[in-house]
Structures are given as C-alpha cells and as structure tokens.
Length: 99
Image 1: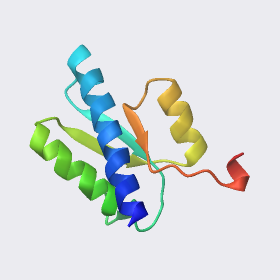
Image 2 (image 1 turned 180 degrees about the vertical axis):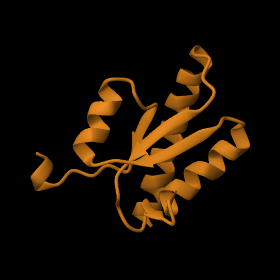
Image 3 (image 1 turned 180 degrees about the horizontal axis):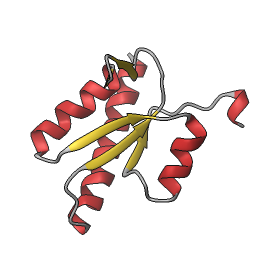
Image 4 (image 1 turned 90 degrees about the vertical axis):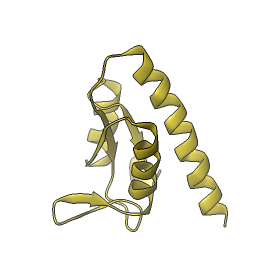
C-alpha cells in the first residue's frame, strides 16, 4: 500500500514540475529518463514499459503533452538531467553502489 501511495505522490510531483517547465518552453515532446527497474520500468520489444511508465503515460495522455521515456544507466541519467538533455528523471533508487 505504501509503495502505491509513494508512486502516486512521485508521479504527481513529477507531473507538476514538468508541466510548469513545459509552460515556460516551447517543447514538442518531453523526454523522461529512467533506469531498468523491474517491474516499474523495463524494455520489452524495444519499448519502455512497466507500472511506473504506464502510469506516467496515462497521465500525459490526459494532459495533451507528448512524452518519450528512455532507459539509461543511473549515472548517465543523472548527468543527462543535470545538463538539461532530458526533462525529468523518475524511478531512480539509491543503493550502496551509488552512494
């Protein structure tokens, strides 16, 4: 139950931040970076799928914004976010290897 509440909260925060960003720019498509994290985000037949990805897609389908999700290694995803190469990053977890 707590995981579901957390994901809904996380998606809400992400959506709020991204839509604020989108209003300030003339963007055609928002690009989200994520990591390979079963069952939340993973690649299947060349498409990013999973529970978090599908929930995010449903939200964006209702807002009218176009979005694309790409899977990257964690460090690369963070660097791409810092450089502004992606709009947002989601479903990244902290592990002892990433401290």
